[in-house]
Image: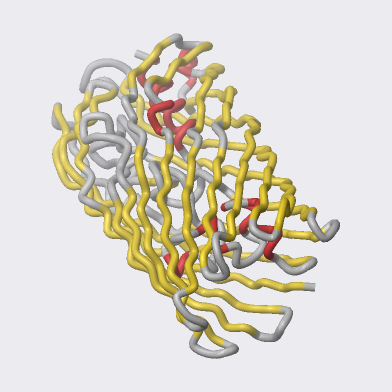
Length: 408
């Protein structure tokens, strides 16, 4: 009886972050600056617009001023409204809107140590998920609340090999914390149920690499790689009912967050127009199974697949003070209807984005952006704790971002 809740728990621990429905590959968070949102993050590994290049391609620091500080924030509102049925019928509604408002911050610092060596530091959240259904919904035996916070510290270095070629590297020290709840049946219906809560955390580390080629005065190409990050999650399961003390105890799971590669192009069409393009790959096939150890020992197949992200953007430098941006993107979904869970109602997404930059002075600028994500109605065929959910989601995401950049 206790194996299934632990399976769902460790899945949540591995796959959660802290910003609603995830907005890039799978549950990755691409919202790492506001300056790129208006272009739908097209060309992110080549544009090197500011110190946030520490995340997207550390080699881009060689194009920055001597010292630069970036502070950004993102308001994210996902919608995930389920409609469908549960077998056997246990009563309850469809759960309401499982998406909620979230604030995701980022901060970056870049510093020119010598004419050819640059140092950087980033603070961000690379993965994320937050969902919460009504407590009496029909899927309450599978999921109610899933909330995890991730924090990534990213010291970096870049070296200008020549006027046309730069390289960069960074270390990623990452922390994850998860809190998940669901209703646990204490036998076959109409047996009573209890509210189960699981909480766990861990530290992991990885690295990122980048290269930047200036092919001509108008064109440059960026290539970046972010490594896998391995976690051994230590957590506890608890209930408020002393009669089910057997469900209280430790659990661990070894999980791997995926690696990714991005190839980006930045091309200056004219003094006023820039064209940006991007192709990114994320290795979600690493998440093929979920082994559980501790109170319960169980291995569950997950069957995720590697996916691609495509994006195209344009920037219009309207005046010395103001630039305007636009972009489109498409994210593939790594999971099928048969493997999707109520905790992660993820689907393929189409981005429409616009934004801009207003330069306050030679040293400072404000960036702003908005994106709407159309999510391809994710289907759900999920079985757990003796119940089977069958239906689909009405999903979308809205993102509003702002950023302050200061060079000194």
